[in-house]
Image (cartoon, rainbow, N blue to C red):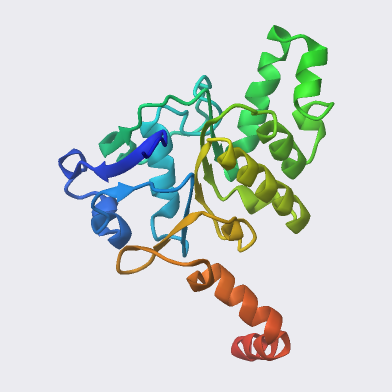
Amino acid sequence: MNDRFIQSIFIDWPEVGEDSYLREIPALKEMGRLDFKKNITFFVGENGTGKSTLTEAIAVACGFNPEGGTADYRFSTFDDVSELGRALRVVRGFRRPKNGYFFRAESFFNVASKAEDYRDRTAKSVYYARYGGKSLHEQSHGESFLAYFQSFVEAGLYIMDEPEAALSPQRQFALFIQIAKMAERGSQFVIATHSPILLAIPGAEIYSFDGEGLFPCGYEETESYRLTELFINERERIIKELLEEEE
């Protein structure tokens, strides 16, 4: 039995404006009903192919603040939310998540600031213990994100847009381990990423966004893996060709 928090999604197109740019994105136009069969689902593809747009829409449709945070966070610094969140329909499972979090790389500072606002409502010793022993704003972007994320222990729904953006390769391995362990314990993840490290988490499902539609693909079929492998194996040739193109 599929006991995931999100079973599937689909777009109610009459709720999208006739002149909306969303109708011009092939991956969204051709999506149909998207089923979530694994506890970890990755969205991959070039910039502009719709993966972050869909990730944000899933978060909004599930009740998260568009700028990120838990379901309890309600703040806005800039209103640029896509109408897709209103048009997206989410088929939920019988379980309800005990925790949840929406991560956006570009707005995590605002989420950390909101966490600081809650400090006065929480015993200081408990607050600092929760986030690695010190304030989130006293840590680097990558450290604060990991500390914040690792504070969640119960099974929940976690939606992430390029979580690797502020993380070194070593920190990405730490996130890899955290996601894999939480998924084994029943958490569900929907993640848009370019990271070949995170994409290698065993048992994950990968969907590729491209100029023609949205398709399931294997790890070694992703552009992130193929380009990384090519560069590592043929670094000198690739660098030479790249520099020659600029002349």
